[in-house]
Image (cartoon, rainbow, N blue to C red; front, side, top):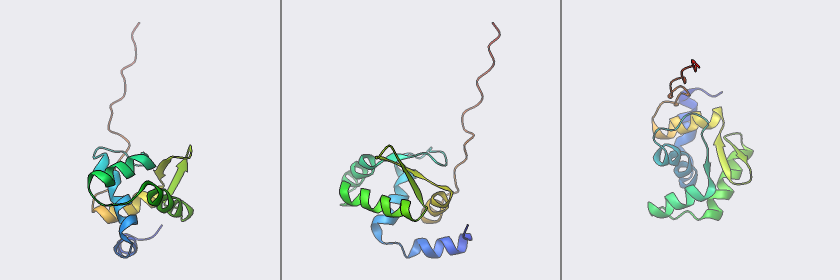
Length: 112
């Protein structure tokens, strides 16, 4: 894994569509956990609502390129999940820490 400094430098040089996609994860779901995914259509709707102008086709192509480079994993043809490397890039772009998985308390054991 790259250092935080290396990742920040890489993030700074990303073209806008890639930065926008990465930043969209916490914008769309502020309480997301590491590894939580979004659909291509969710990104496109978000960009339409925020007037960023990235089409569904452009989002899909950019996400595929990021998946080819190890930042995302694409599942079921439409869902984009950040890898550990992707989570590190999200943190570098957004200046937010990588979210943890432990938000929901354990369900108490049944007593019956």
